[in-house]
Image (tube, rainbow, N blue to C red; front, side, top):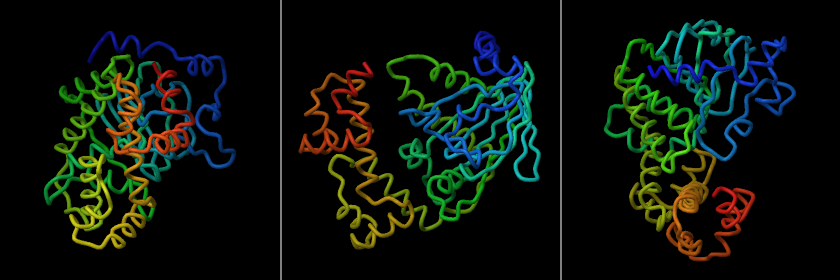
Length: 320
């Protein structure tokens, strides 16, 4: 454990200061715009990112709630207790709990020494990571969890608990992740994705092997791999040849499994790569558009603005 980092995490946040002043009800405006059910919304926390971390506020009981993202709780110091359904789960220092977006849970108030780090993760974050860890015919519970969280048709609540107290390798990896996500390194986003991939692999080794992927999951794995590797020139006809199905059949299956069509998935990948190039390269916007697969610069501008609310040039200027 990094003692300097622990000292930083022990400092009171603004939210914790308000709680200690006597505001003992969770300020829902921080977490949701809904007035009925308590659903923590990713748009309130993630902004334009796919992953972020925040220290769980101490001294306050969180009532039953759910969230529209994948959440990972990591106990950096102390303990953490929560209830999922009828099950009470007590986490100790070093333990990790992964919850999908269909879980409802209730969180007991943390004391001063209890430092819990919440990873807020949009399911799309795993689009490029999943194909690299979902290889072979026998898969782990982790892979099933990610597939079911990203494309779950019955919206089944699911969580994975890893009692890892004393695991120095995981502890060191978490230190790197937290420091990277709190820093402003030029390569922070790439490093975070790399470290998260390593972390998932380490967690996979902590679980017994489980059942093989379903045919639907194998199909989606192939789709992800194809888009990840061929996004510049990818097209539905080539994908159909790879899976030995008709273009219509592939299109319909993708829509059924993901609630998105092939064009949506491909466009999401291309725009993500374009956004990365706008931030971390000095290439002309015309070149960036062509590099990610768009020859029509006007069309690229139009879909980029629709997705992010500003033109590529405005986005580049605002972020730099």
